Figure 1 (cartoon, one colour):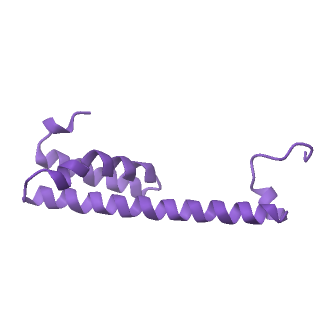
Figure 2: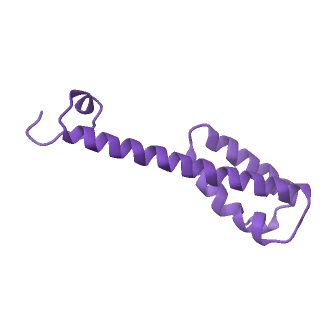
Figure 3: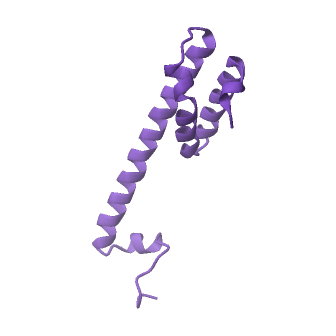
Length: 102
């Protein structure tokens, strides 16, 4: 999508909408939001209220995606460490069983 043709008001509307979609447990939308609107928010000149809205929601999208990344990595590390110990609950929530297990 070519965002250069959109008005500042439409960009502000989209960046805000993408942020709230990301809040609905879709953190990949936050990454897309930050990538698509970063140049418009920080590299283009402008000081209107739409520019401040773009900056606010791009920053919030970056923070949200980083927090989700930390949570997912922490969960994965914990799960792998606990699964190596052979605990029963890790086998109950896994989708891939070792060969010879089933």
